[in-house]
Length: 358
Ligand code: SAH
Image (cartoon, rainbow, N blue to C red):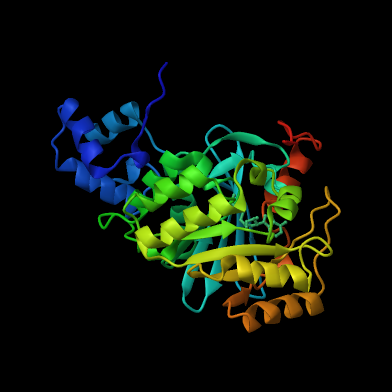
């Protein structure tokens, strides 16, 4: 049997066409879209201003993505919430809510697993299982907003997965999330983080969107970058940074350069100076992330003295820098580690797929 149409991934216009083909009045599309993307309904049953017959018909013809909450941990320190959600096919994904002064920010996953192979990252250890559908990305935000009872104002696509490796679904997700007939998030409040897939960055720059791009840099030269990120063999820093320049020209959005500090690997003052020189003509700032060690690798977090020295060196050279604050310290598990430990517990340590070694 063919898979049912995924109704939460459709635009209002597409939904209207589908409904008309079934002989259902076009105006219903707006009502249904509002139920899905504004009132955040989890079932057709909830759509009480539709007739019982129509609800039954929709139930038969469409699939409605709803996530099952497997686990949620709430930090008593800063209110951070870490969620594990189960998808319809049994896969498990991770999302995080962070409470800031400027609003509620949700970090979502874009894929089940990841095939980019970054050495320090837990999300890639089992390889890529599959892409997430737009509805599955949206549902992470919707479920958390409902659970919290407060508006989610910011979304960062920085959870498991490489968003530009799931390009079409990512862009559809952004358009649906920012639709004024839906949750109506501001595009400026969405950040997409990439390991540096050049054609994807160029395409996103030409999409007519105004989302923020974060580039995972992690090294000031190709040599060190290649030891941390296999993708650096495919695209040189030169190419990646040209694409970033283009992104700023096209969108006017300043970039974020993410730099995870790993002791003895990329945290020397010489590397700080090289980093400053590398990005001095870019419009953006550096976000330093003390690396979260994962047990499968022996990378160690830089000590706080080195982090401060690295930061001050960049600042002296005229670069704007922030150091990422660790959120939810008391509930453990960062950067895909919650999902990973869940998988280890529930599959006896077996995870499928392989680590890329190229
Ligand atoms: N694939 C995307 C987004 C997911 S990761 C990307 O590569 O940007 C989000 C950020 O967290 C990236 O900068 C990533 O390199 C970083 N990251 C992953 N694991 C980490 C860890 N253990 N410690 C510190 N940063 C990590």
